[in-house]
Amino acid sequence: MKKNEILEEILNEVDKHPEIMSRRDAMKYLTMSPLAASVIASASVGASTVSASSATGKIVIVGGGLAGMSTAARLNNTLSNANITVIEPDPMSVSYQPGQTLVGAGLWDISDIQYKRDDKLPAGVKLIKGSVTSFDPDNNKVTVDGNQDVSYDQLIVAAGVHLNYAAIKGLDGVITSSGKDNSAVKNSGMSSNGLHSIYFQDGATATYKGIEELIAKAKAHKGPEKLQAVFTHPNTPIKCGGAPKKIMYLTNSRLEEAGVRDKVELTFYPNGGGMFGIKDYHLAIVEQYKARGFKWHYKHNLIEVDTANKVAVFDKHGKVKGAYDEDLEEYTMITTHERVEVPYDFMHVTPPMKAPDVVGKSAVGSAKGWVPVNKETLQHVKYKNVWSLGDIAAVPMGKTGGSARKQYKVVVDNMIASMEGKSLPSKYDGYTVCPLITSIGTVMLAEFNWASKKPGSGVNAASFPLDPTQERWIWWLLKVYALKPMTIIGMLGGRA
Image (cartoon, rainbow, N blue to C red; front, side, top):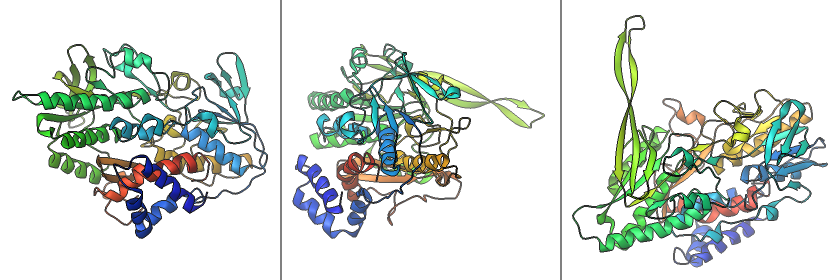
């Protein structure tokens, strides 16, 4: 697809919601801004080329979401005699999950993010519409639905994560994924009576209805006490670490639009001790929170929800000094726990997340569930013909679509080199991007990699010559209009 076609796709996205931006204004900005031109160039599916290879072998990919299907497409583009099989049970596996935040804020409809797996299957790639139920890497095979053995020469595990609502007492043991039939989650009390979560598709739609209900309640509210809107971040790695804050910022924008912001208190309860793992972004977010009048309480993990009485229960944890160790010349640190009950009128729950048990408890998994790979080459630490990427891979800070966009190229380059008997040429540097929506119309583009976390390194992964800690309209243009065409057309085509 040529650059002008990518531009047209972006403008088509603009046309869907003229109340946000007109095509004329978008076209003016896109054609006049050098920075916008670079955004379009980065979205072009021709931005990354691949080299042909005659390597042969049977390749099986477990997981047909964004990471798995993009890898299949790139392999298909590269191998002259491709023999690729994708195993994926979800007919909507390639739906655009980053858009669930925008659905939750009423900016997009659910139809704007739904894409069918079968429509995005690369030509010539085989598809097994089932679930892997066991892995046998010592014999190079997996079993599908308990009765179909599938052998391989090379295995790619891109199975994603499960949303572990079951870890929260009161949500009735529900473990699910984003695009499945989520009636069980809703039956647990989610998506009603002020309790919401954008992390599954139906929940994203219900979240906006919940925000509208909060606004209506605020308009009718007469008492001196403010209504309470609560937002959580759990004690596990999660996909898109910025999403719990994004929906908070967008709720704030909707309350401001309605003229009732002064009647609602917005409070963030993260399990961790900061807003972001990179100091510069942490400090920027704290200042944004202060400017908006948000409240926050670190080291609070949601452990229980009383859905009937609308009370959230948190484990407030910390460290205190214990006995002094004369030999080590230091104090023993003791972990403390305090049960904290918080009434809410509206609460957005970010669920704990985990690897699917079929992966985590298998030979290709690990004690923590994730697939253990060399964090740079993405090759399994034990099985050299097994690779992993995306949310399921055991790499630091990697659970975003932006990470997968870098990782799938590394997997393809290295796996083909391995098939050809060559050394592995590509390394993943930990690049992650979080377009942090801070209001309707502004985004802070947080880009970072592993080097960014080193003391004194500063923020060193920015793609554009602008201060990445600042909220900007151009990043809103990127997030809302450019990233979906780049992902759905470019990545799923194996080229972006």
